[in-house]
Image 1 (cartoon, helix red, strand yellow):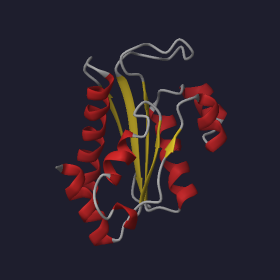
Image 2 (cartoon, rainbow, N blue to C red):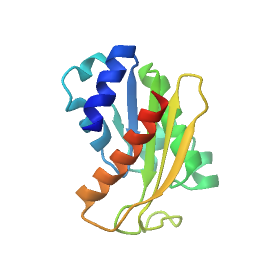
Image 3 (cartoon, rainbow, N blue to C red):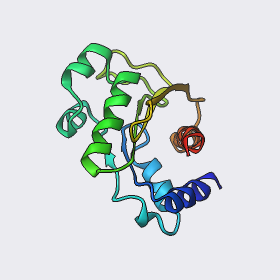
Image 4 (cartoon, rainbow, N blue to C red):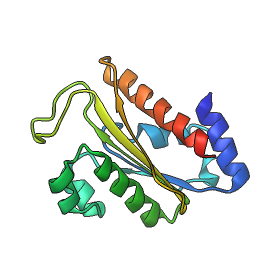
Length: 155
C-alpha cells in the first residue's frame, strides 16, 4: 500500500510530517499512523472542521473571507500553519465539501476538494480535485490516496 511505502521513505529520510484536515476529518493522519514506526515521523495532526477552528489554529480570517474556506489559498495556509505549529518538514492542508453542499459556506461546491503540501522551502504543491459521489468513507479514501500520490512525487 502507498501509505506504507511513504511512511518508510519518510522514516529513511528522517522527514517529519503533520496535517491540518477539514473534510477528511483526520483520515489522512490516521492512514499515516496505521504504519508501524509512524511515531518516528509525526507528532500528530489537527482536525479543523469549522471556520472558527481554522482561525483559532492560525489560518487568517481574511484568507477565508477573501478566497473562501474551500479554496487553494486556504489549503495553503492550513499546510503552512500546521507545519510551523508542529515544527515538521512537511505540512498538508485539506479542505472541501464531500457529498453535501455546506449551507454555512456559500462557496461550497459538492465534491470539490483542495489540498496543499508544504515541504521545507520547496514550492508549495496545491491541487483541486473533484471527488466522485460515493459514501463519505470512500470519498475520504479517494482524497487521501490523491494526496499520498502527490506526496510520493515530492519524496
